[in-house]
Amino acid sequence: GAGVSQTPSNKVTEKGKYVELRCDPISGHTALYWYRQSLGQGPEFLIYFQGTGAADDSGLPNDRFFAVRPEGSVSTLKIQRTERGDSAVYLCASSLRPTSTEAFFGQGTRLTVV
Amino acid sequence: GEDVEQSLFLSVREGDSSVINCTYTDSSSTYLYWYKQEPGAGLQLLTYIFSNMDMKQDQRLTVLLNKKDKHLSLRIADTQTGDSAIYFCAEKAGGTSYGKLTFGQGTILTVHP
Image (cartoon, rainbow over all chains, first blue to last red; front, side, top):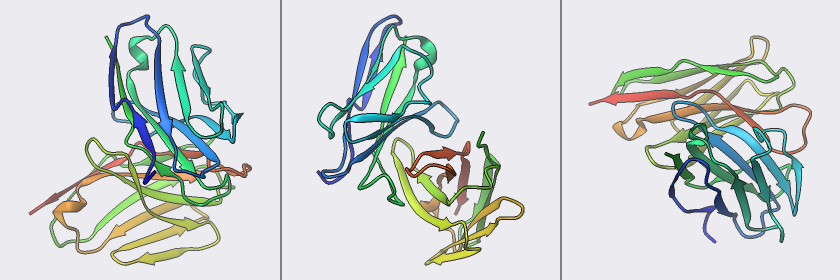
């Protein structure tokens, strides 16, 4: 694709529900990153994938958060038992290689937990 | 751990220069970045500088890096109303071979006609 695509662009869910956020990276990009941006803050690192494997998940806040990338392209961020504090914009980025200088960001998914 | 700090607001008149400042703590950072975010949009990479450089110029943008003081600045010459946005400074974590970034809080730049 032309750029990193994230779906949905907006998601409203009730507290306690399960949500899935999808990221389609640029074709051929092996490295994929998820970040979370709370209101008025900069993005915070959540997890990094090299190919299919999560090479660094040190930013996931707790075990309600999980992400997969089963075929090394599309990634899904899964949040169980959502809480109001999970409300944020979730950003995905990809780069051609892990050592690439530039990563390309998607438009983000705005998650609102009510 | 890594920490990146920015001033929160900057207001300038159209045609003036803007200077956005950033400080960071990780002395082993390899790359430092400036990103722009417009309302409802993702992050757009503006420019970056390698840690062994002290200056980089790219059209209207000038990046200055003072590694001793861990201070980074972005100067935008001839600022236009279209430059109004949030600007984020970010550092690539030292000690990693991949692009894990630590971002500042962002500086809201407002350009007045």
